[in-house]
Image 1: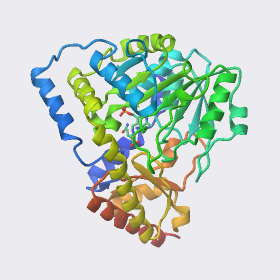
Image 2: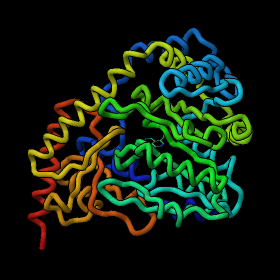
Image 3: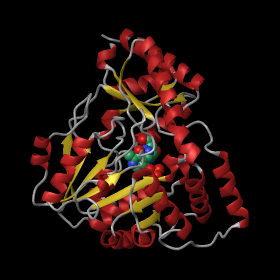
Length: 390
Ligand code: PMP
Ligand code: GLN
């Protein structure tokens, strides 16, 4: 018999919705990926590395030049002082880095605090590692946790807390005062924070990203996870950064050595080159994405949708209930992809129980004409939904 944690799991919503989008020839504003091909210079560097570079096993912890480049990158952008030799490991995407953190740090029965809506890989991997997810439910539209929430969630059994900011799917960025509060609880309860920082470069409004690792008491008790796929809009690349103080990195590296051992060397060398040479990219990307966000927001508002503010990520969310749609998010998303030719993500998929069911997530990392047509089709779906009301 198969493991019941996996047999009970549905197929991830991203695969389900992308499959339906293909089947129905729909515009895909569901799964989060840009429709531009990504920076050409970095792709050329990867191609060059495939032909002329070394294609045998790279070192287990990653190419030294990439680990050094990552340390320098985080010093430049986030003021972190990292020793690349003892604190930086390269993984096959943030997904592997998360698995390393859960497998490497959880002991059976440990409690792991996660915030809901919860990115869909966390809870199953926590359980598979023997942990018990403890869910703190956030409420729209602010999606913030309170001191009382943390008082109720942290216990003597808490081992880890998982923070995702900017947050997928809510598109919110954790405020400094909330980070300070979380750090206070981590220190008081001797808890390690797993920071899923994959969206760290997609923050709008000129605000810079502040890693929890820089808050008082957190330097030695934070695992910081990044994703080159997100940094460079090359989501298929699956090159991740796993960053932690040496004592934690030791355990994480043991998990990594038997999950994947290593990651494609040509992509690693292209990412290293990108980190050292793409200052202009990091400046332009959030500005370009903010323009796309604003375009989709305006188009949706013209169609009468209520759009919640998006502070970061490739995503914005629409409040269906406030937009005259009485169907739940899943029913609406199925109708939209099958009958109106536009795919979206129902955020109820980010809950195990008691979901918020009136909000859908849309990806705006798309060309203008795709966004305009997507908004029109979503309005068609809304009209069909209203017409079908009993
Ligand atoms: N965490 C979050 C919050 C994400 O949104 C994603 C991908 N969208 C990942 C992890 C996975 O990142 P990667 O593709 O580098 O594995
Ligand atoms: N994280 C991406 C999203 O939120 C999808 C990643 C995946 O398909 N597993 O859309």
